[in-house]
Image 1 (tube, helix red, strand yellow):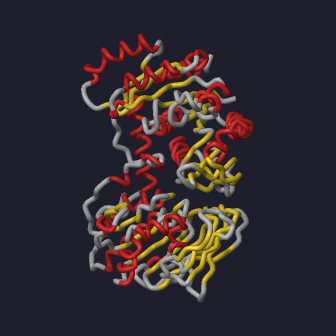
Image 2 (cartoon, helix red, strand yellow; image 1 turned 90 degrees about the vertical axis):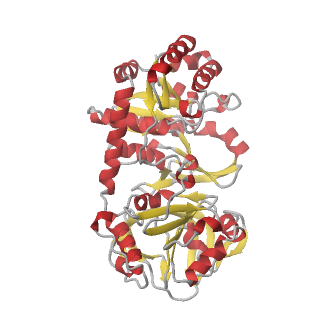
Image 3 (cartoon, helix red, strand yellow; image 1 turned 135 degrees about the vertical axis):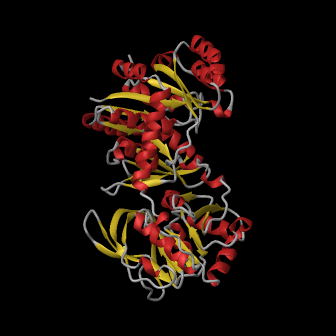
Length: 503
């Protein structure tokens, strides 16, 4: 069986996911087969594996750092919030049911066999498993039913490193308070502390580190700096939505829906020179973009209502009348139609009018489409005509079925990679385009052609400098992360902890 080490944190957004990814890359560089693991993830950004199973994207990012294919074994439980008090519960990549918070709190211990089965199967395939916790292990009202922090560590006897965020302030209170709220057996599993996101002169911090070690009874295994890296973050904590960007030569606006999901669809566009990709949540922020994207959402009907009430629907319709490119993905595609109906209460129930930019009706059903697809764009008209024939690759995650009131040309023709079944995807009419495929822009040639089309519409020559090796860029970011952690963590001691286990 694999050896394990677990990264927990004093709170959300202290850097657990990044430290986990960095350790995965370090162990892989050192010649070990390593895999990430998170027993329970709560996220709207999800991913479909080659088997057609759904998992959180944070573990996909960590698998990339480890140099391995993502597997649902790395994230056996995924919670996708449907409201402020409820989530869709996904177990082993498949929807189990929707539950409110109280229902799930009573139910989740029944999922321990699923967690252990996934963990032990990974343990048979890999040398090292780097486990990530969630939030804080010191939530005293939740500890009795915990399956993701100390509850998980005890299940597999994993040694724990606890990460604190000095950038928020109060890091010593974070770490020491967490230790004091742990039970005796939990404290025994904690083998070290990490202070993360440090900026400044470390020598000034050293006296505090010494006092922390004395009071906590465990060593501080490193003070890691604030890292400016371009890797995927936990979706609920991303800073992308709040960055105010200057408008570039080509300006793309993504509507920041309240239940936005899979915004990783647009990461590649952020890395093209001369392009500004802005997340906008109000009419005043919209300005005059060259392209407006309606992204995926976990609750199409509620977000459609928000779009209408915020005034953004009217603003988008105005831009569509001005012949600007409007592009909808998944839930955003459904919004472009005439009607969205939910007879079985999959989302909010009832029926709501769409934006009427495509003659299409969508009806929600209980079964979820989960598949990876490959194919190519059909012959397109309008601003994006140059995308015709370009390769398409991505995945679908949706519960709605869309039918057209009149015949429209499909956006792409694709095949399911599992059974090879061929089908048409999406549709377009004028400069309004829609698709169910997440990741449709991820191929570098597609992203570059998209920007080229928008540039030609403005009589701008973007040149070849705009094309970037996105896969190579991500690899470089993971290597920078690993190099930084090697420099600032006591890796020899961490290897000692790993080899000794939780004993």
